[in-house]
Image 1 (cartoon, rainbow, N blue to C red):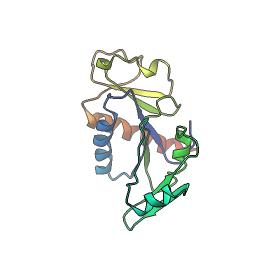
Image 2: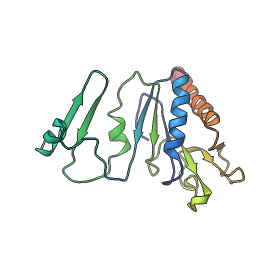
Image 3: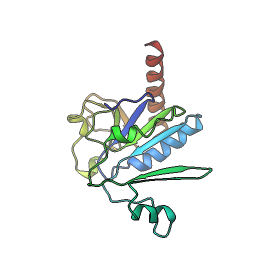
Amino acid sequence: MPESVIPLLGFAGYSGSGKTTLLRKVISLLKARGLIIGVIKHTHHEFDIDQPGKDSHALREAGARRVAVGSSRRWALIVERPEPREATLAELLATMDDESLDLILVEGFRDEQYPKIEVHRPALGRPLLAARDPSILAIATDDPTLDTLGLPRLDLNDPVAIEHFVHHYLETRRSSASSS
């Protein structure tokens, strides 16, 4: 598992399972509790946060390997890789060193070992990740009859219950960290 001082919890599942939709709701509920949340999202798709015509894009296109852009409200770091390869969760976690965060939520990285909730829709016809991943803590599903292999079953359509599970996980992590 990647090392982090800040508690880490992921939501992993196959494409189309509803990870982003669920995370948006859970983050909103956690924020309403006053928690400060960081997010790391994995994507298999080519993406670009830089726009042609912007100075940062021109500097990157000119050959800059790293471009940091900042304003009074936000900042971003764009890192070009000389050879394409997937970023690891540990690499992205290292960028989240802001100790003001209460929790880092991760979307994706389903093949890495870190504490996570599996988001599973049987209608997709995909197997349970939990069958081969011991780091899965619970399964969020829209099927109330699904065999969750002894793991807690969370109702995918009940983000409040899932937020309660996440909050309980966070409180458990905090209390174990303070007792060690």
